[in-house]
Length: 398
Image (cartoon, rainbow, N blue to C red):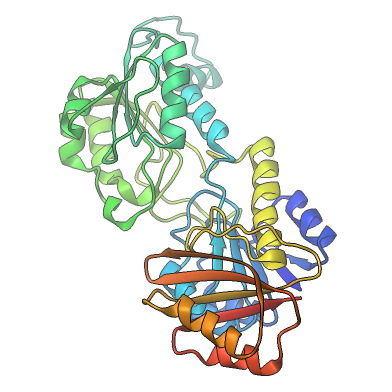
């Protein structure tokens, strides 16, 4: 088995996969589509981060690819429908860097509220200014969190511990933690908050959700943070509000277009603005988070290849079936149509194959049945299963 790890995935991921018997090839940078097409020949497991885009064309060239690991939270850089069509499992790290993102948001929130960015710039320019004008405590101020998932909810708890009053808005029904108050609409949150922090996911419907209209509804002198996705915010509208003084400060960690490699020029209309913190997509880039992500995603890839487990897979139906020694496992990904399980079992019965254990799960257009049998299947059994019109992919684990 061969694994290709891109974009400086943590060393622990490579160690874990090598310990599991993989031949690991590492690249310290992202790959464009043409280079990725060439690199995927003979690769069974691919690990990437946010700067490598996995397209349908690249997947077409990856005949041996079984699984993809996104060593980050987002998976919008992966063509998920194309992975489904080819039966390629995708895993990510939905929890591993939560704390790191929350700590960055809190540190930026405090720095902007105290206008430490301006004080720092003045000191480096030789200007001594002890004025308290425009500098505030965060205690008692209202934090509005847009998106109350893993990151938003943890930010809520820690901000409340600092004495902030927390409001949140989410399109999904979420349990309020502590004394946080749910807002019925985004407008309600914007009009009441002193600080607005975005923590939405990467679904396409979130594209451009925060523009001039939303900034206009924010309180004058409020602060804005985006550590979620670059394409959800109009940076031109944010620039205008910073320059007019309507928004007192901002912190942005994600951008619509980001450099692919270190040293490439970063271009943004937000450069040079006062009381604005710009960071190069480092919300989850702490050594602790990257190590945890490396362990977690590599473990998911290893387990999927070894026993077919799809717990927490982004795209495949979730199945976890304990494996008994001495048995052969059939992993059958198929179109989610009625009667497939009955057809599979009838076919096995016709060939005299006894089922020792079996588990089926479905998600959307796909079904996934894991079947343990006592004896090695004949070539006829394997070929007949592969020949079923509903079969997307069949793997045999001996």
